[in-house]
Image (cartoon, rainbow, N blue to C red; front, side):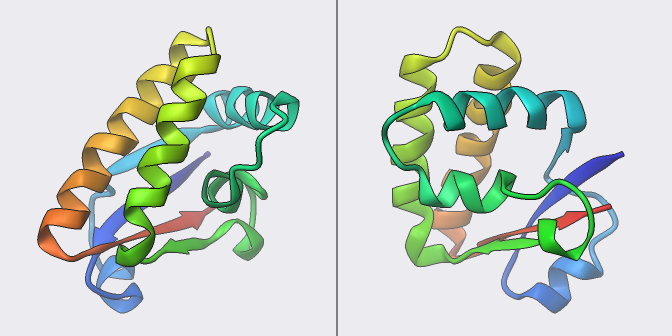
Length: 112
């Protein structure tokens, strides 16, 4: 099972896209969840992504006007973690979110 993350103009388009931009496995989710919970700094956008892994509660939207804040949160977590899997996932998420910002798109996540 995985949580699929799409880049699109709107949720309808994201829901009809065949291939996600990135998928988060349960293993990555568990590690990232642990990292965020142990940090004293709040990461509201990252938390939005990882708060729930399963079901419709796990679905999320990161609007295009929130992308810079998301990138900042990603940078802060990458600086503090030693988890290679988390660093790799967040680095890819950051790269994808840069494309979102350039093309005026948003991030949409759908949990299984």
